[in-house]
Image (cartoon, rainbow, N blue to C red):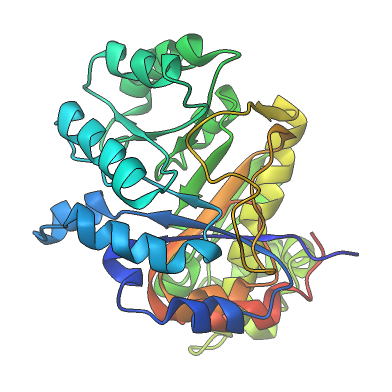
Length: 323
């Protein structure tokens, strides 16, 4: 069976310190999709001031490794965000994905769609309840219907993913099983959380855990097998994406702006987006490159993280699992 493609998201805030070609080239995965996020949310949290020109130069230097790159958005300032969009396009010849935030006028979204952007990120979702997001997302998807598709930044709320046909989302919570000892795995349309210190819970779910390549001995000691658990967490995201594909069916990406053209030069390892129907892409967001090496034999939901340590180890485990 062909290994699933690895979908990986990194923020410029963290990736700028990384030898990106060496890191991505060294992952034990045949093909990957790489999403370069500007890191505006992280920068705001950390009190950093990002330069659009520094980001633009970094993107130009590494663009052969990018499937997608997001605009350097300015949260709460749609005009400044649009200025950055145009600057990256005109000054650096890039094709960034525009970002539209909760709290901004819907006319901002309509302008992006009317200007030919067919792949748009929805941001500033975190911190809003599902009840708050639902009417806002209803309006977004109504405006974009048949004209554009969406990426949901940090969107992991399962009822919302079942309700809305996102083209892609990213998750930074996929690695919590390794970090905090609580394994979150997908089981036939629902998520289960298993405390790795709860031997009774592990015994009750032996068959499910085995389907993820996990054995009780991997989890019942004080020093559980972190590589095996990281691989299972990543595989769970992939299985969830497959399940959502059956719910929503293929999602059509129209030719247009908001992503690099398939004709742009690209590393042989990197997959370019093509207009046409696709299932949900769920990018695994990370800040530790070791995490992504652990799961690097493929995933269809983009994993996000911040450290280079865990990414690399997951790759060696993930490819041995059955999707």
